[in-house]
Length: 432
Image (cartoon, rainbow, N blue to C red; front, side, top):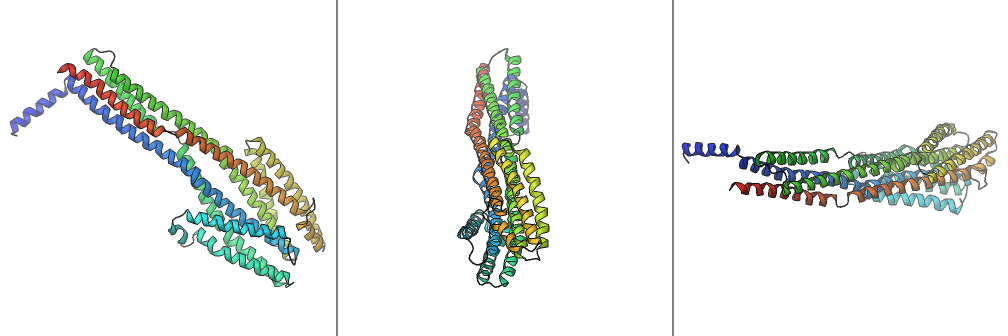
């Protein structure tokens, strides 16, 4: 092609661009590309929300439950083991079974958490999962040694029991707490991702509608045709797609917000209260195991018990369900009964009545510390189960709101592009 021919072709194209066919053809090309691109980006945005909701239902949600169960099982195992030690000789069968069940549940749930992580996360230096996997058998071994010495009446058993509890408090429970914080943090991230306002989808939809309106105005000005069936159909498809995505997005926002308000936020507070309950129980029994040298445990009990009271008050203000509120009220009543039993226990121990203090601590009477503790722990467990069920239901509702949205967006974006192209092509045929 010579320079003259190229110049002529360039002028021809420039001239065509200024004509009605050129303008309409350009609009058709832009509309088709923008409609398809907007549909693809909107679909990706919706799919990211679908993935976040699926993770809440199938991964991060269950893993946060597993992390909380690990922490609770370890705490309860320690509280149960120290309580059993106070009984001397052969501990009650129910107490032994409870301890064994706690260790088994902690081990089994830990295996689930390990399986859900990449191998590198488990083997990394300082990994919480590695610490838990390595130290849990050590703790169980110390408890068994303490139990065997206690059955033989050997005073060394108390030292082993304190060493086991120290390992639990300084290594196992901090690692379990880190794991719980990591998993609940991931739940929050997924909730934020799923429940954010669909601003990108809104802007894309408005951009497509704006171009369609501009195309129809241009078509009217250049051809004096008021209505164009293709462009009207494309506009209707784009509007339906935008409304569908916005309605689904707003519904998901409401469901995810409710999953936080009625579920995960309350679970966090109630789980912290239950953990504090178990820590206080462990302090209470270790004070007696130490036989006069347990002031540090009593000091810690006082601090943890105050924190427990604050958590129960907070849980009461957060409760949005009458059944959950009733369980929290019962828990606060049981906490008051436990506080009274603990005061009675401390009075007996401080006055030299060690046997009487042990009876109050591990007895089965209605006014014993063990009875109040078990009731409080049970109330908190029931409240957690109910709030967790609310969380699961709201996440399921969010997933339902997103069902089919990606497919609908894909179909409607194709219809928008096809309608725009067909509508303008029909007008272009008039210039042949």
